[in-house]
Amino acid sequence: MMSKTIWKSLLAAPALLGATVAMSAIVNVSASVNAAEATDAASQVTATDRLATSAPSLPVVPVTVADASTAVTPAAVTPAVTTSTATTQSATTQSATPAAPVNQMAVYSTEGTPSTGIVGQVTSVSQLSDVKPTDWAFQALQSLVERYGCIVGYPDKTYRGNRALTRYEFAAGLNACMDRINELIAAGTADLVKKEDLLAVQRLQEEFAAELATLRGRVDALEARTATLEKQQFSTTTKLNAEVIFAISDTFGDRATRNGSGGFLGGINAGNEGRLRDDQTQTIFSDRVRLNFDSSFTGKDQLRIRLQARNITPYSGAFTGTNETRFGFDGNESNQFGIDKLFYRFPLGDNLRIQIDATQMNFYNGLISTLSPFQSSGSGALSRFGRFSPVYRSGAAGAGFTFDYKFGNFLSLQGGYLSDTNSNDPGLENGLFNGAYTAIGQVVLRPARAIEVALTYAHSYYPGGEVNVTSSTGSGFASNPFNSSAATPRPTSSDTFSAAVQFRLSPQFIIGGNFGYTEAYQGRSDNEATILNGSVFLAFPDLGKKGNLGGIIVGIPPKVTGSDFRGATGAAGARRFDNDTTYHVEALYRYQLTKNIALTPGIIVIFNPEGNEDNATQYVGVLRTTFSF
Image (cartoon, rainbow, N blue to C red; front, side, top):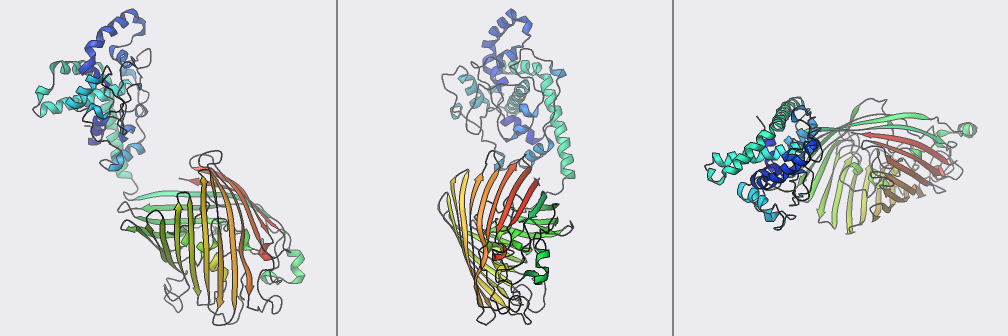
């Protein structure tokens, strides 16, 4: 027995030329068909084939609706014998390949929902915008629509009668009108069905018996496959999507050994300086794997559990002497899987969305807009600095929440709270509220469709002496303005102000940038520091091909422009600030090789690493291959 979904598809599909011919045109056309057959016997074209190939004089009923992946479309019936061929094959020798089970399952899963695209029943031929009263088949269509109710059009209310028709489409349309006639008879309205119509349908039913039998067989097979899929499906609420990165990379340039204030990095002394300044890296091949399990319980919410494994050793420390050479996707867990992300996102009303993170939270992967086309670590910028403004990396990745409230299309208010990685520790100066934290607030303005502006404020606090204030402003980029080796660490805090803008000059060209200013404080002393950062970018979406992305990013990583703190290491009594300005230059081109594979070659150049012009320029080359599925 055919399922209810397939019957809906057949009833809704406007491939009903068979019924049109049967009820209104077959008598008038049969004579001309017989004459054509007499003069062209070698063609062996049947009367029905001749009717279908008589376009443009005969309007052909189009295929319609979202169920086009099932039995009524040529794509779902392969190989289909089209009526445009000169010789018609025997229906009993035709074979067919069913539609893909995944597509069929998608149709079943959306049955009866507004998203299926099923159009309301056409009740008047005047609803078909491309059918005119002067068309020779107007009365036939009028009879089918207004008398029998077994014709519908495309979603845009067109009929498209000059489209080619296959024998399978003809059979599906014939079957739909047969069912409609049976409904009228069963409902006691048999007087609405003319005797000549029944005779014509009977004749066509005999002509297309093989095709009808094939369609029924396919429906039975489809039901069996669907039942198997339903039994073996992973989950009714959860979907798996994944991303895999392969990266070949290397750095070039002598290792940075001096920070901006003149002190040697990492405790290096003058005797070791010459030996350790050589290039310390080799070409490597590394990977990152992310498996996302996304669940929805209401259709508007999202629960994500992400597993991650990596073996990408960061280019920093002993390798380049600076964190400014790090990738946005690096990290090394020796390819051991662990829970990297766990959050639940849900709406409250029409304008407010909330996301609660249990672990590994960052503002940039919450509900805080970064206004950057390079945000994604798998398909965006190659470096950490190039992805977005450092303010969105404020704080340590712990637990917290973010929210986004839209005041229409013009204005959005966003914010959040982030505790550090010890948010699950009930000990002193830990936990959700008594440990390190960062609070952020942001206003996003959209004065025009192509322009977005974000104004951001973030406050960070570290009670346990985590003095690397630049960590709270985007870290991993600049040196520490305070002395991390102090015998008695003091609490530190910072206030960061940032502005970002993105201007879409065209669908293929975006220009934007950001600027940030930070004031950092250490304890109750007079030790203060100021930190600046900024960048500009040019983005070229769909460069050369849809899905591609070209990009150029130029910026200044967080620079300590002033500090009152006098350190105990390095040059005696020296203030820790950057004498020179570091410049970050990055160029990349993401080429969408296929829908699921992207190649991104790129280069990162760091001038004056660690704010010191005596340090050698660092060059980082990488070829990132991203698989997504």
